[in-house]
Amino acid sequence: MNRQLWEKAVAFHGHECPGLAIGFKACQAAAEKMGIGVSEDEEIVCITENDACGVDAVQAILSCTMGKGNLLYHGTGKQAFSFFDRKNNKKLRVCLKPKKHDEMDRSQWQEYLLNAPVEEIFTFSEPRLDLPEKARLFTTVICEDCGEGAPEHKMRFQEGKAVCIDCFKDYSRGW
Image 1 (tube, rainbow, N blue to C red):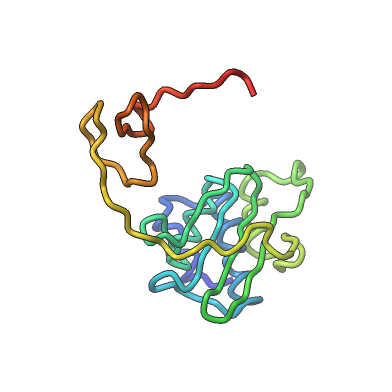
Image 2: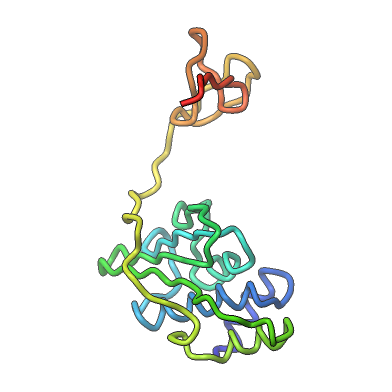
């Protein structure tokens, strides 16, 4: 285990925990199997299937962030991360194996995660999702109800007015 990278992830996240260890080891697995490292722009993309502690490790170690557009959330709730390398056209989905850790307390589970081989912890497969396009800039449109600005692709039309998602009143008849 790279203690310096672990400390970097802990400093970013704010504390040590098994969830952070999952993301840390997922990054380690991707680095080993794909030959990737820190993403200065959008060279490395991560699609996370969860919004838990491990995502902070992805941000701290690989520099994939929502703001740069190279960290995307696909909410399945699974401890799974799909990594894409735009330069080398490599991709890998890393998913935590179902494992009974009831006999371990929290600190034992964390130590196991940090020290076990990645093959013991994760399954590896092709990502189920395609590599997303690079982040785009959009024109800001002012909502005609609340007066706040939002990017044009997030706006809706309602009663002939451009409105934001918050002001839009969805209409559905059940199907």
